[in-house]
Length: 387
Image 1 (cartoon, rainbow, N blue to C red):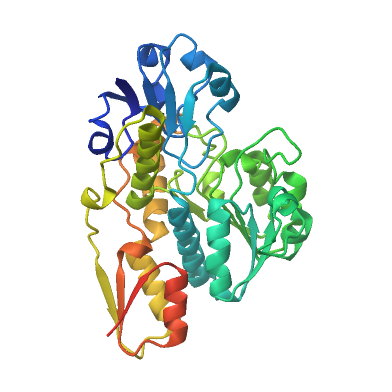
Image 2: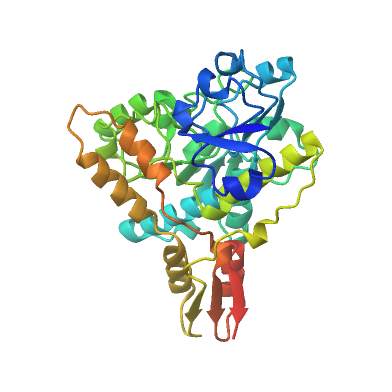
């Protein structure tokens, strides 16, 4: 079989070389010519998979190694009898850790304890639910909005509120919805000018879902008008051609890398690999434990007199400090001419992203660890060792 794949999918050969011959391309360059004689197409979120791409191809299976599917025409695949698989939840931990790192940095910059704030979680899918569970374990007051889940959950795991109430009452709002333009609850420009006005003064807004969930032009107008709002954006409208005039107004800015941990990306590859094995009746022999790279940081050690705040902040930043991604993004764009395209820089930063690991890969060693410290670290998925 012939496999055409996005070159940024990790461990591609390790997982798929026994299944077929692999040809790779940059994701945005995968077009009808590249997939014409392919049996399997493997993509990430930058490749639009639809009739235009596949109409004259021999593709029998499409896999996206991402949690989102807004780049896939699912109805067309179903009509054509093309098998499909995604990787829901593969990078959920990484996105949660991105949000936590943002909160840790902003808390230091603005002088507050983020665990004392009211958090509003919009979208309680794989990422939103995992964030909610962590926050609840940390004792954070959470408001949740997800009208689809609210209508379908038989045993509600939390008390849902309207989006209007969440925006009005939350100190921190974090967005984790898919991007949809149809249905009863479309999320395109979910936070438009009117909804942005509903945010509390001095609120914090984090978007690590899809860029167009927030109306970027309305956001820029609001910030230029002096609305007291702190914004962290990992996703942007029209990316990779982002609005560079918006960038200086954003407190933490990153190029769509919130879920880009090594562990999350490998998990996405593995999920699609196993789906292909099932679809084609092939043995699933690859075991991720044998091919995943070792983390560079293996352990941290704290003395018994370290405070909860010191332990949490040091642990978070030692594994992932979002300020590094923010600085690299701004410095890379600063080198561009005023009228130059941002696309090449944006995509290059994603393609050559550093080897970022998740909290769970690090052992935290604490002498006579208190129950409060241990519980907080476990809530964030660290591996605790009491010595």
